Image (cartoon, rainbow, N blue to C red; front, top):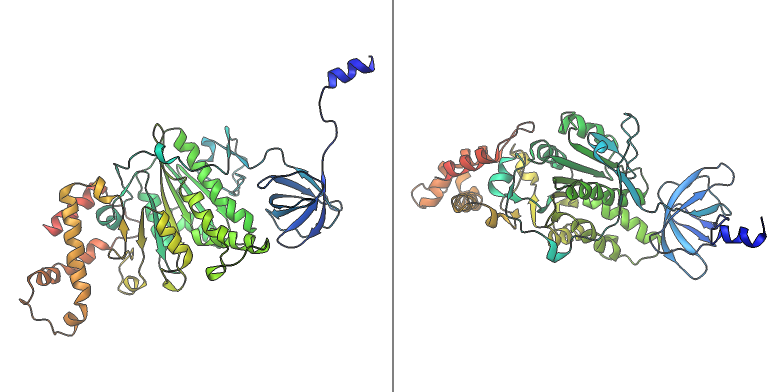
Length: 434
């Protein structure tokens, strides 16, 4: 075949493999050169000695070199190892086969039940729902927990935060919501938690039932990048089912560990630390994740619950403060209520649902306001009542609050494995306040 014809047939096909080389390596950041890359590109690093492979993401670019944050630990790699562009990019394979499975952020099964055959590729990073394409939240979303359904009613497509210190009962409440929620699809992201808690959450909180549930796990021993993108991967899975017209429950534990992962990445790249050592990127990352949940016109909805670990029960923590400003409501768990044996320990006076008034009936709203008023009177006068300084008949409303104290506390309490129907909770609240 003539050389000219051969060139014509080959056209512009690239017959060489483009690669770069590692010039410097540290436990958190790898410096490489020789490739033209952009921020957010993924690359594959290959060890010359062992043949081991590690995926990484380009997090900073200079004129002649670029910085890679690895998805796994980089022991065994050294300067001179090759770096190849990853053609698939930040895509994950999703589909109905994920239901009932436990996976890592790249949708690789970690439950020992065999491979998963996906049917569709989704990008991990997506833009949030455009403001003018968001649907109105006008339907209640039942979670099977009396306190939430009755006093902090949430709607389909709402984003709520569960704020609590360590050991107060976030995981237990998460399990109650996942079991009792009126949603055909449930996506749970366990980000940065202890590995021991994963099987415990499945067996104790979910009762071993993963039906219609996808569990995405990135434990505390995973790299910061795996913990960061684990949350985005789980949200992409929820968006896939939302795009099929489903109403999806999304739960993430915890936003704080997610922000801490970005703190490790940001500080390693030289970002300036701000309040509590968090770089600016930790705070800007939160709305990029949280605003992807919601209700979209012509599609389904993602009702999201994000747990926030409040260190030292300090609600002015920068992550808690930023989260409250983004979310459509907050549920605060109280250590004081656990001491009194009230579970789930939801502090209704410090909690709020920003869409509740728009989705409940006037009768229900009147009962909620009455409950809050009587409960506030009890808390304000608790010391006087306990020491016997209050004389019955002095305040008519306080007398009513005292007479209903036991029934109100019983309404706030619920066994961890029980599920309360939405209408049943509303009727019970209205009857109590009536």
